[in-house]
Length: 389
Image (cartoon, rainbow, N blue to C red; front, side, top):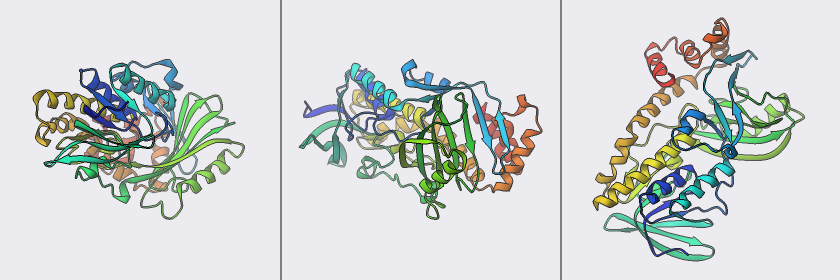
């Protein structure tokens, strides 16, 4: 049963929300997590790729989370040049349904109460401070009081807007994405592929992330500046017809990813944001699983400190902004690189590929690829070296 009050209410049951709930609950606080969908981890709107080292820095990795281990990366230029990238890092393609559900299970094991089909309709605000939420759960209306609300309600987040935070994303910075899970594919299961081409993904890129023998997530993201001309779904199906005409489509998802600069603040009186709701994604890649988990963890820890201090003000909660600053600084740098890379033309990508292929295979690293891409922007090369090494 839903209690009338908790120390912390978390809105959203994705990785950010589950990490926030777990961080707060394991410190002894009473925590409720409300997820609007019928089941944690469903629907999956994600390419499901993640770096193994980064994920392992936050949680113990369970084998059942992993659909496929990735040991190689390949880039395709517009003219068809293929560049295999030298990398020592192991990546994983997750099974997000299992992964998300297990993170939520861990939050529950640490004391958080979880409720699905629980749709938050608004915030309770008194004396300018958020003090709970209004929600519908299984046909019944509830008012639930809390000391702190953590909004981890995804790219469509309303918690931030209700709290008066500026979470607006410019059309230019919203990547419109479409993805299929497809079978009967002649692919290398250990290899992820990226295609850069105005034909397939103007202002973005296309990816192939294997999930097992002959199965992969194939998707693309298109900058909002271009998505009005042709829809991502149309572009994706053109690619499939061209490159994988015998593919069997097992599922299709669409959605948006905020690839923006970091928000100026992630907090208001009684409120913290985490995950996509807080724009905690990498603007260059659109990836956000690990960064969202980190944001959720820090949000939960900040809530604990604020409640113990008896101070739920924006100033006290601003400790979260301070703890996120290192990641925000990285996000700003990635955003600058994104703005440069996504303005490159097909001829530029072909030239970068040609120059990279002149290098011996062991020199074909991400840093060296970006060195060639940014040859006219030497000031940005140092940022690349710091970010990728």
